[in-house]
Length: 137
Figure (cartoon, helix red, strand yellow):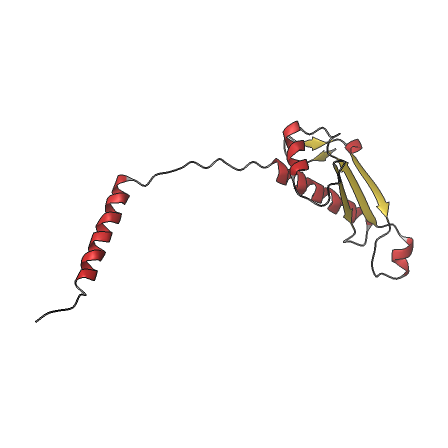
């Protein structure tokens, strides 16, 4: 079981994890050892709530295919176990990010005292500027 938050968790069968050969430099080891992890998560067939599924599918992430499958490749580390942990952590952060809801903003008004102070400062500033005028003798 993969735990995302306290109330969101995924079953193991919902996430398809397979080992593949990593890309890039590394000599003989990279050519014979499957240390990279290829993770596939079908959003539409998952046990997430409908609102969470809609948020995930609506995100403009390039890792989501047209069929609604989240594809992730983890090859940062040398060992398969560490890449698997990294892939699961990245999946968790992706789902957490989509499940977070921003608080609705409440419109506020300045207080009566703040309005009075602002007007008083403006009139004081106006008086100061008026004294800068040309002096006639």
